[in-house]
Each structure stands twice: as C-alpha cells, then as structure tokens.
Figure (spheres, rainbow, N blue to C red):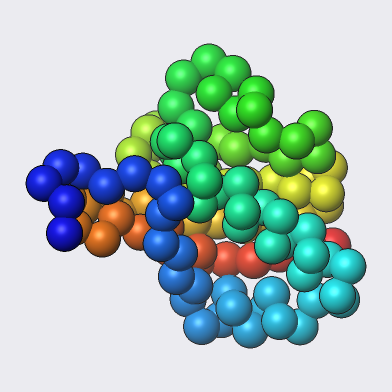
Length: 107
C-alpha cells in the first residue's frame, strides 16, 4: 500500500451490461475499445479536465463530460471518430482508485 494517492495505471471495472455489449462487438471494434481502455487507464487525469486536456489522445478519440453541469460526474470517451463511445466514472479513492465503464456503444 502506498502512503499517498495512487496514480496510473488505474484499475478498470465494467458494469456487466457494458462488458456484454463490448464482448458482442465485432473483433476490430473490440480492438478499438481496448485501445480506448489503454488510453484511459494510463491517463494522468482520467477526467481530462481543462482546456485541450484530451489533446494527447489519438485523433480518433475525445473525452467530454456527459453533463456540462456536473464537472465531477460521468465522462464519455468517443472513439472511432464518434462512431462509438464508453461512458465511465472515476472513483477517486486513496486506496484502489478505479475507472468504472457503465456503457459501451458502437454504431
């Protein structure tokens, strides 16, 4: 156990329905979801706060709040040029901080 707040790589968990949706996607899309997951778990700040905070993401991905009125609420990570997304929350705890994916979608 560390004395301070833990940093990346973050732990990630999936709601069962989000995981089932991910598993039902075609293989090439699952690879894109896995790439998006890798970006999330290694991000310094999984909420990508600030102006152009998601500038380090690949061109095909972007992150924004689900509701602009809730800056500490869920985030949406768009991938495949906005054809798919992951909605997630970040549980910022001293011990075991965690990203939780609550929705997976691809069209």
